[in-house]
Amino acid sequence: MNDYTEVRIEFSPCSETITDTAAALLADAGFESFVPDEKGLTAYIPKSSYNPALRDCLEALPWTDISFSWSATEIEGQDWNHEWEKNYFKPIIVGDRCVIHSSFHTDIPVCEYDIVIDPKMAFGTGHHSTTSLILNRLLQMDMSGKKVIDMGTGTGILSILAAMRGASEVAGVEIDEPAWENAVDNCRLNGVENIVMIHGDASSLAAIPYKADVFLANINRNVITHDIASYCASMAAGATILLSGFYEQDVKIVRDAAEATGLSYIGYTTMNDWACVELRK
Image (cartoon, rainbow, N blue to C red; front, side, top):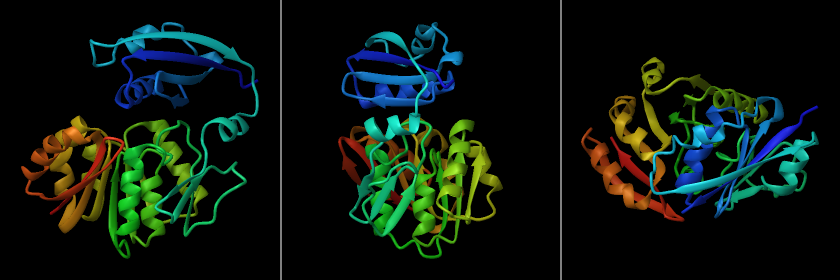
């Protein structure tokens, strides 16, 4: 029986950064899906894998000025796809041209680009502002014949849209093994055959047999600023890089790190205080 344990965590104060970071920590501990809101996070894990020593995991949060409370409830096995469809993952339209939905959705708007994402977590589905920012930019760019690298690909959604828009080759890189497996599955669901999904970190970029015309990195500020030189080295002359996963207040930090590698700043877009920075080599 697919019984689950539902864990409810409330943070004070609470923000998207806090719930995103908490979800990443819990994913490493075996949690499979997450529903963030303005007060905290609801997380789900198979009952057989649940460890009540949850506080030890959350103590790793990199903030000393927040407090949290949590409770756990056992949930009997049910049709989980139906529950996701009914309560959480709704189809989303990006830029009036792209619809993102799961394979179990039935009432789907018709759009130019139809992307199927079956997420293991509630992130990387297009609902998060950082994902939407890059998706919108990809819809505006000429992707025909472009070679693309998608660093921190997550569910693979950015790679899939790039391929659908005419990219000739796409390489997605993901450090988290369950996320990488999910990205491979999502590429198969969408019938895109020119995407290679790589399980690894920035050191894996050297093995990609081309320089990117378009480089995507939707991760977080610290990882981006640490690895930006590797990103730059993986780009062709004249290539564009889109960076997201951080707040608008961090744009200058990211811009300074990128310009130090020789990249030229183009500008940035925002959504709900999150930012997407564009630069060119």
